Length: 92
Image 1 (cartoon, helix red, strand yellow):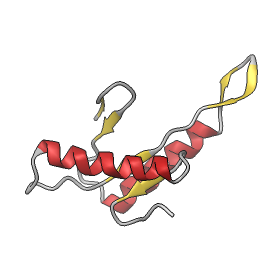
Image 2 (cartoon, helix red, strand yellow; image 1 turned 45 degrees about the vertical axis):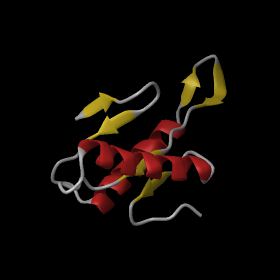
Image 3 (cartoon, helix red, strand yellow; image 1 turned 90 degrees about the vertical axis):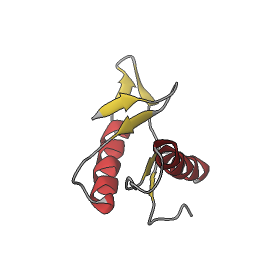
Image 4 (cartoon, one colour; image 1 turned 180 degrees about the vertical axis):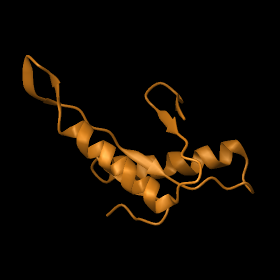
């Protein structure tokens, strides 16, 4: 399920998918997205995105789970953008 979550943020729920597989899939989508030109009239113009990936924890509130993903997203942005950071990876 994909849903808009905030102005420029989206949430993707992948039930039954491990965190490492989710991170790999999101990174594949990120790479494919970045490889395409955004405008046919300006092929040098490229788009990218960063993502934070974490496993939903039933012991946390919805807000707590979204906060974890948001923290990981900002780690990706602070690492130089156009990358995916998961709960088991660190932004270098």
